[in-house]
Length: 268
Length: 220
Image 1 (tube, rainbow over the protein chains, first blue to last red):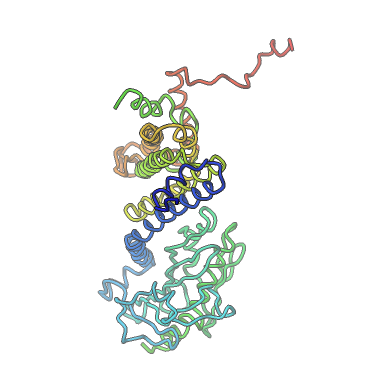
Image 2: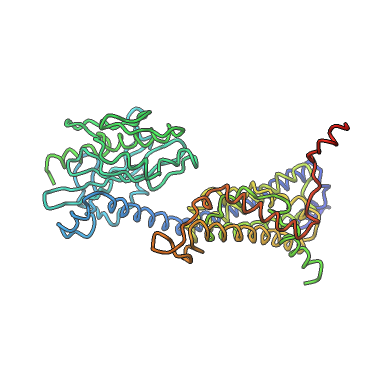
């Protein structure tokens, strides 16, 4: 009668010749299992800390982008406003959602929660995001003569990662005041050049929408002569078009389009 | 620690340094040495990964089937590297952003696999740990030397703290922008190798392809 206790079984396994098939498979399986467990445990247990850093970096990016916009210091001095006013927008209607607190809203979680969003069909899904949350935060800055700046959080698919950025529009709601990409995982050295301050700077001053509210901004090859064309990055075509696509989507009818139209009409 | 243990730890520092004697890990030595803080973080990450990898691989060396030996070693090293990368992202976010892919590329760093294959597979756990630690320290030593020179001459600072009065602030020192580019690390490494081999001639290798004098060539 053979002993079936796990310890004996383990000893028998270790005693097998190294080149036998079962030992080879067994060792490979065990090493892979232990390695996978170690990696998963670290990744999951450290996730909150890492997320906090990403969050802090995002806020610093927003503050830095706002600080570099021309004339903003004057606007802040005029109005006495310390910072931007955050509101939550119902993307479906374009109304400001008053029954949810913007400070307590987790936009990142809403982006992947089917209960808080609407699935997109491929033809409408210019940004490649699969689903669109119902509520999105928007940051407003009002000066002495009305609205001075609108900052929209935008995101979408690039070549191999999700690109996240802040898009700032001037008070006329047609001119881009600045674009700041704060998170991406594109190919280092190629696609990652979308975060070059020089390239992001090309967006400032471009006309994003025509008088009728149709989105006109595009990324083109070569020097963009048109007021709504941005010069793409050589060697990073898919990443730079990805940025253009996500900007177009979020300014469009399924993105912040309805909200911007209401804002333009002076509703808020 | 007995004498041979000390040998395992000290030999890789200068006599058999992974960078200057074995010419391994040069890629990361070029990339992360523009500033001392990135070089230090990278060194610590490599020391941790290398000593842990050597220890683990040595502990299971009798049970690693020869046919899948390298795959198993790489799996263990890769898992350790991911863990190190995740820890850096959680506790040293800013530096980890500047190190970008280079922590992940420790997997492909020949020093780690080299030590696993040539030392840890044949030696008991304690010497393997010391060997990994020594090689990591040797790598770190060279990185810190190169980074000190590059940051001092390229930015006039050490660990981000200004030590040389910069010309832009009314001082006398104009930073050498070249020091922040990769070729400068090649030159500094070359000079280091030269100095070390001049003092320790045993490291100098015989010239494999000597340039012949005209007379010798004529006689052929």
